[in-house]
Length: 126
Image (cartoon, rainbow, N blue to C red; front, side):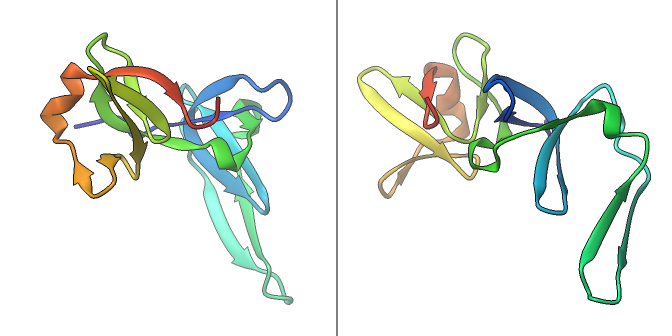
């Protein structure tokens, strides 16, 4: 079973952070994986705006750019590096982007077994 985790760039210093993805109102966060996301409640105000109340999480939240968020695919490249959505991997001279946790190049898809022959060389956000 693969780990469910995300990565995204912090808004304050542009560094990559890894963990759970959390959206509170219009802000996006990565929550440190050492903090368990419990105590999430929802309710509607009279104006129908959805409010998220999160307890026991605030200390582990880092605000991130949602455009850079990508989910871990559960795959590792030939060097053991985790492969995330948005990564660019190379196999021989062929370069592929990872979209929706799949290898894609045009209409062609690589299989999961192909990941062990690929190398993460960059991502679409760098």
